[in-house]
Length: 559
Image (cartoon, rainbow, N blue to C red):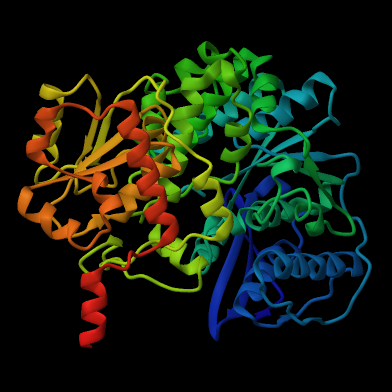
């Protein structure tokens, strides 16, 4: 990759810094714009473009040639950042060549301190801390306009006007910067890995006037890891004249919400939503819901209610779709205590559903992962269980010991449960069990969607003595059985009589209690003693592996 010497142009209201680059053999033009009144601080310098250039070179495995002198301090920072990317993501460490290393000479005003400001929880907390004296003072707020791809130009203008109003209310100037660096970065990497380089690099166009440039941290030190902006990475983008500072690296998102709540006038002006094309916040996307959770936890939900288009509802968390959880979410979920158990369960359900998007078991069991751990493999179409050429799930020795130590807790509140995907027989079975057995719990989900979160199914199994399911297949289902016994729940597969005889013929007699014909439902629910017998048979089958029957031996001898 080659970064050429930039040029300056002055429009009616904007000074534009334009830098030509060659990346992956293609010529591109990177641009940063600042208000024209700051023209004396904007130098034709390559400095603002180097953070992103380093990120992309490291990812693409290209060396970096810089056609302009930079300071030894910045060069050391770029190399340190590349080494950190190699540690985090296994990227290459580029050879960085510069025209000449030279010391930067300050050309602007001293004592100026800028804060990147988005009106999010993190940057608003940093602003509050600067205003109340618990953090170093800020003299400039810096905003990078036009970064959100889901915002129309008209909406973007409205959002900027709201941000300007916040700056005016606290008596600080707001500098509006523009850039195409996000568009350039998005061609190669997700925003979560490039946003720090884009934001800080853009703000460094004002480096000659800033002694200090602060960026609020997305995650606290306890959850810090590979991310486009972190307390380890951000200071590496410092230059000889501008120190980049990671603000509040030890403060979690919930703590920051508490800080913001001390300024209700700023809390109502929060803007965290990027998914919806709305001036406020949609109240239903991942970012909105985890922000609302923070304020719920600190008892300040009413302060931010007017900032969201929809009221806070934990059930909306369970209904969240993709994308994958944000890095900042873990610190919020970890902060949810037992006094908010409903809220915590909602987030756990969401996270377990995302983590198990391709699972075959409703409680999250992934046969492919189990076989891989044992050094084997299983395709999504293969039968898992016992009988009809099905393969049993391999269990490591310590797992077998743990299962053998379990038993059914007959004091559990739910006598039986049926949790399954909607299909042939499941609804009919639920009706039959409800008519002839004691009250139980039924959870049937649409077969065409990802279904109920695994965490919710796990809680249901842990509260039930018996798990039932219907099957028309000629084998005993190993996924449902294994999920049941791992939750201390006895398993029974109900079948039509013809299939029942066929499957039992491939199982040892002691395993027959795991199967029942649908006609046996009228005989009533198994007694507590029968439940223990069923559970022991299931554990024995899971631990011993595929049974060796006389029919199996005959087939083996014939082959």
